[in-house]
Length: 252
Image 1 (cartoon, rainbow, N blue to C red):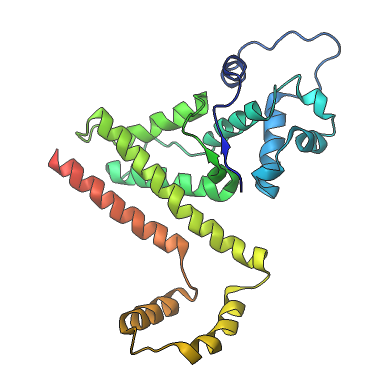
Image 2 (image 1 turned 90 degrees about the horizontal axis):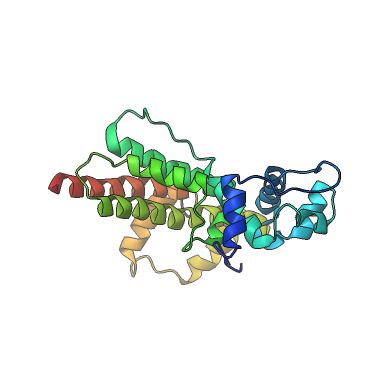
């Protein structure tokens, strides 16, 4: 899938839309739609059909209006995408009373991001190297930083830790989404795939040549009842990542 990029919108107009600048005066009857309705419809479309399906025309169809009418609310697809990103950031929970100290708070940050990607897989296909600084994105970043505030880390280290956790989730969730999509995209379940492959593999596989892969692979397959367990791998990796952050904090 082609990568989309945030930050390609008109700077002045997107800031007005994100931060709630006064609506431009319109002549004629009362507007039928709101920007929030348009963004919600665009998000639902991307959730259902992927980012490649997103266009002003398709969003207009979902809302029962003409594509041209949408341009009186949102200048174009670039602005729409930036609004969708900021709206998604508002979905992550931000409780300030998480028991368990920084580790529990940072784990919650990671798990909320994991869940957000699972709800909106299209987010993986948007490069945010030039993030649009909307209110929800900034609120989310502020909350994530508070997870490690007061631990002795410097401001730069706090930013790097939050970035590291975000990058880890971004990579880990790709595997989970790919595994979930396989049966749908191939028309074949994992069990069906294995039943077809297994007798062919037995004809060429030499367990004595690969003793470690044979032993560990058999144990993992029996444990997961699948080639992989993405959710378990995510939790295991997250705990090891937090162990590393703990070591850094202890050195401070």
